Length: 138
Image 1 (cartoon, rainbow, N blue to C red):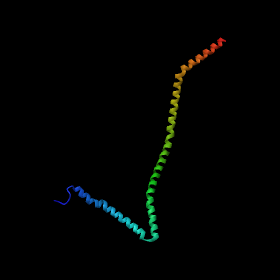
Image 2: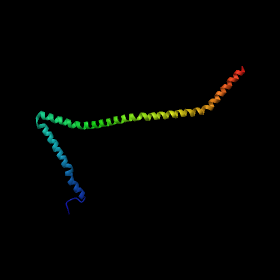
Image 3: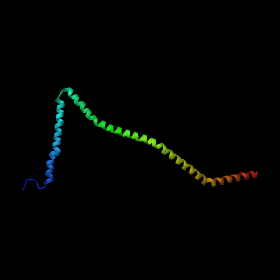
Image 4: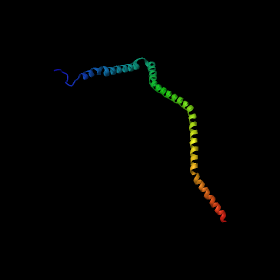
């Protein structure tokens, strides 16, 4: 019998081999580079060298913020451009809408006046009769 456990499959053996190359090796290399950089910064060249590395670090730390600020600026410029185009396009359209709404309001007023006209005529006729009857009754 072999000395490996019965539950070890070929995919599990492949995973164990890849664990070193895909996980451990990149992690260890990164740790060595970071520790080497820290040792170089601490013992490598005095205060002038530390200031240089500090300046370089600040540049690298501000670059992502500047990139996102540039994206925000591009969005704002795009919105300004679109609003300027919209401002040129809107007045003719709103003039048409205003003209149409005035026509609708005028038509609604005419329909309402025609609908109420018989009632108003009856009220006027009744008031005229009351006035004539009062004048005759004196």
